[in-house]
Amino acid sequence: TYFDASNWLRQLQAMMVYDIAKGSTLEAAAKRVKAHVLIVSASQDHMVDPIPAIYFADLLKAQRLILDSDCGHLSPGCEMDKVNATVNRFLLEK
Image (cartoon, rainbow, N blue to C red; front, side):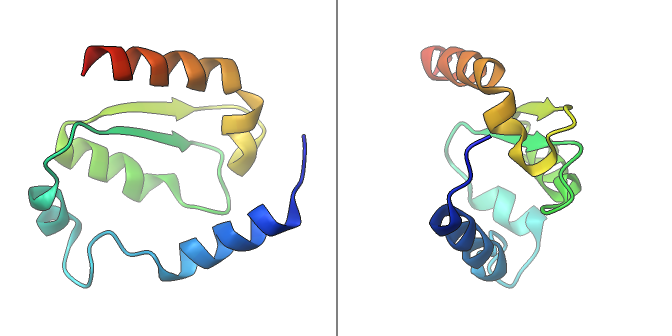
């Protein structure tokens, strides 16, 4: 798997400062979402806990793709064919 240190740094920064609830709750944040949403998470991700993303998807009644490979946080890259197919279907449906 390709590793880019700049990408890694930006992901870490985003994880530290991005808060979709903006100081409220996930339930309140879900009420503000007007878009159709596809949430992709990795069940074996030990860098970003997938449980809040799955819960948020449930609140939104959003489509979700849960990747279950040994690649952990890098699962979207390891399962790129599955991710691409799911995203393409999602975009065609909406």
